[in-house]
Image (cartoon, rainbow, N blue to C red):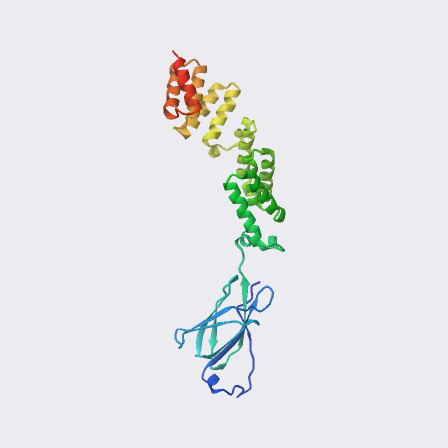
Length: 312
């Protein structure tokens, strides 16, 4: 639990203890800055005291090796106190200063948490160097973006060995394996991610269905919710229906795929084949003409032109 900013150690002073007249003409504030976790003193902390009504209005000091600081000749009043040290969160507060010696201040700073600690929890990094882990993740991410799949997978596996069960890393591992066409392993990684975070279940099911399509199981697309189907999903559903000999169902899926992207030549080419299958030569020629118009340089465009030339 976070310690209160100022734990005051009141020192009772006998009358006349401070003989120098300069001290009697101003307030004295002394204190010590500690590491909240370890209770060890912090050297090099910038101590800033500010009071717009005072002259000077700003006083700065740096803590010594014992974490201590002492400020003399301060005006009476309410001073803001700021403690700054790289790697630690600021912990601002206020100090009420009176003439003479004021109660000593014992202040605490808390180490700044790395974004990964905030994201995954500090306990996961016990005994680990979080900065090193962050570097490994960044390197794996860079390898993934560069399509260096082996390097990316090795990086994610290395981090997961230290941070097992982290959902985001499992998903990244699954994505990498999918790119490597190691589909069964990718599915295992995605299923592990869904087990760790059930809110991902629908998303994972969709990804797994698409991988099973890539593995040759076109029927897997039927498990996708209609709202989640992409143009490729719609096209592949047409392929599955066509392979089963259900030409009418295939036609419906190809039409939906074409409606999802009117400039996409592949479903138009398939609609031309469906028309040919049904003996609709004028309809087939119309679809083939669209394919040639929209994507003449593609394989479908070349086949469509050749077929058009051959049709009566």
